[in-house]
Length: 562
Image (tube, rainbow, N blue to C red; front, side):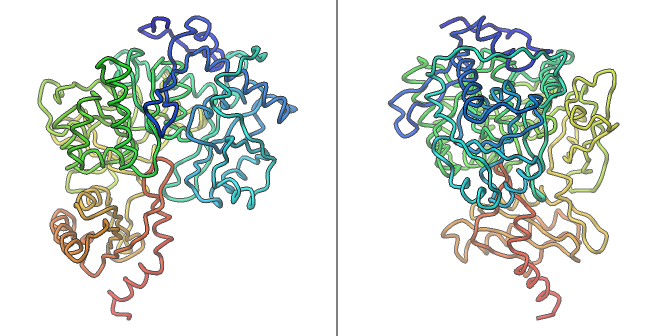
């Protein structure tokens, strides 16, 4: 195989297909990514994809689209196709191939119900759906609600093995920078997901912002000599960043772990895969980073035997997309480096400053450094106080447009007429280190009581969720006189589990303002799993809608109306 260049060559002011073809020509045998040939049989080995193979697959898919679907009348990306498929590299492949033919792709999360997906498709007026060769179960219900022309994309294996001629592509960044690259969508945490269009200009801005050098950006995903096992799904913004931006413009080598149904099953199979890679393929080399959604990091931190296995095969755990409990984070951080980063559909992965591996900041030991992010000053973020909390003021992140350095602010490629834009996230400043900020949830999480008082519940929810008998929980109270708690317990928690949770709630209550405290008669125990977003976080509006009648009855009884 060719030697992997380090640092990776610059790829700015280029359309992504052209960047890929450039690297495929210069470094044809360098490994782009790896995945296991048979997820059910690790002994079958894993497949290494070269940049030449990736480029060939993109060309093959572009020819397939033209032959099967046809070229659009206006090849400027104004027409949208939808892809619902298995979790593999076809997402990145079809994204680039569709651009070459003149379309753009929308990637809905298959985890949403048919109604939400159909509504999302309707917002972009798409008439064409591509599916994987083995259709996902959600495809048929979506088509029943929103009929479309449907075509099955060839398998991933076929695309990588197919030898094809280059598909003609003569567009340049200078002339076509404002055309669409891909359509993603918001998480839908507080309602139906909304489409977000990334243009080529957005992608270029992101690439530039991720490679800031003064002060330097964290090297977690920047160094091309690192190998990252990446668990985020390819239909999610983080997955597209992985396949198109980190993999192509940063040269980061990523590995797809074997799939499974639950976070626990996935993490156990990931441990098996890491041991296989270390013992059979990499002569003792550990994977550099495990990139995990919060539920998977939480599982890792609460299963000591699993953590002991992971410590031997990986160097760093990075989580993003939400919080994990203090107990889980402390357990991981006691044995290996743990860090977190912030990302969003509109901004991608936010640039942050370099953090030390030994848990120090500015020469001082910070016990829970893994909970904090040092935001890069080039982002030009203003943090406005919106509410109080036991840990300090909750501040809403507002990005202010900086015309002199707008290339480090991709969000203004989506909202070009805005002078400032709320990022929707709230943070708490570290009590002793003003440059460190802890992500405390979303501004939409804020509970607005009928008494006009406000409370942000994420810190309290995280503490309660850390109880060994709690599977998940959520506070409610907007437009109500006081707070309540919806909680799902783990199997076999029983009466003792309920008693233990109430004891913890009482302790958490002491830290909260009186108007936000949870009384025993305001706890609703449920059995069904909470609805989830594409990134695995709780879809709060969905929870409220699912248990609306039960919550209403609980408040009615508490008010003496039963």
